[in-house]
View 1: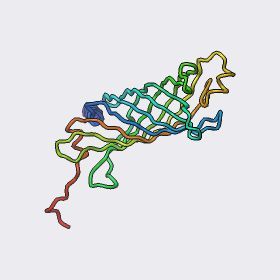
View 2: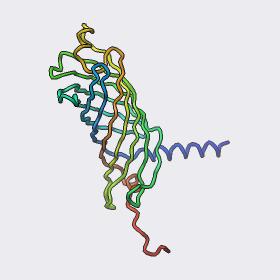
View 3: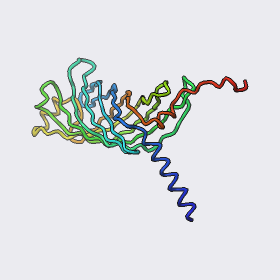
View 4: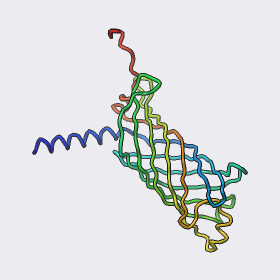
Length: 214
């Protein structure tokens, strides 16, 4: 029984050490898109974020700017935060180079403040929701490099409640979620940071062995 318990403890510690690879925030950006059902508008924009990781838990600060793709008008500006959990990760071979990359799946809990239109103080709402992200992470080529780079694909579902007292007026002027309405946001982005040397070593380029048999 003790042996089984020791094996479990070692496995958990190895998993935690495997996930704790960052020694700087991961700084990144993404292109995001959504569709506003209320006005049948297609919305696109950019998002910036900084994420701090502790073991498998992360906290991110985020901000975005989105435009109506048909008119070019500013649709939404947001500032928010998210709590993140790395629920799965494994090493997989790179498709383009002889090296390994890390495939990871994250779950997000999100809260953000949104402002509509150019006069941001007039119409505001708090958004709450959840999301899932799939990431591929690798490292630099040089033997001394501890640079981390990742690409990310994520989907988020958010709902909002406006602060405006006249909900009828607000619904005619805001192009997106109000009073519990939901919006699905899709994003594609990248992030960069610095990792511990032992963690970055997993992503080194595998040089061919000149003595290997062909």
